[in-house]
Image 1 (cartoon, rainbow, N blue to C red):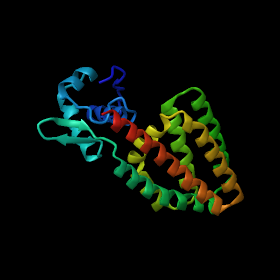
Image 2: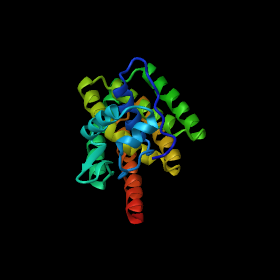
Image 3: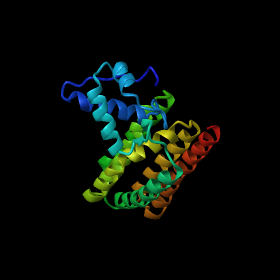
Length: 227
């Protein structure tokens, strides 16, 4: 376990929730690696808490699909498989194409301004090499598109996929060569949405998702070869 995993206390949250969020973030950001064992005593010592909130957090992470229990070995960080990646991104692609089509037809000028401001901040985060900020701004960009479509049920479904998508998004963003592509895709999406160009907006969004799939799949194959 890396030394940069630190607990950030929140007076408004119970300790068990703080511990859960700390470990969840560590897994999503790759500080706790796929396949890494989660030893309760070591984690408790590292975070300065008792084993009880650690145990509760591991149980909740298992329900989230981020941790698996291995017989005679205990809890491990769940590995990212090509199959799970494919499953999530196939669903995401269909939903995001619908989201951008609805946005083309219903977006407001205020929402378009938000997309442009987020893209500016996204570029700044890339220049600063701030992976967390890059991911957060990418999420914010897509959230504006979701909301602009005005379909609350669609937004709810996409939010239910947020955790799985975040893990793959981080893996994608770890590749610096993806950043310029992302900027171009975001800018092209804004142009299409402003012009209400549904056909090209859907195509750009589809390529946007599958570029992510191709890059992450390549990373997974490389990592599997090393094992």
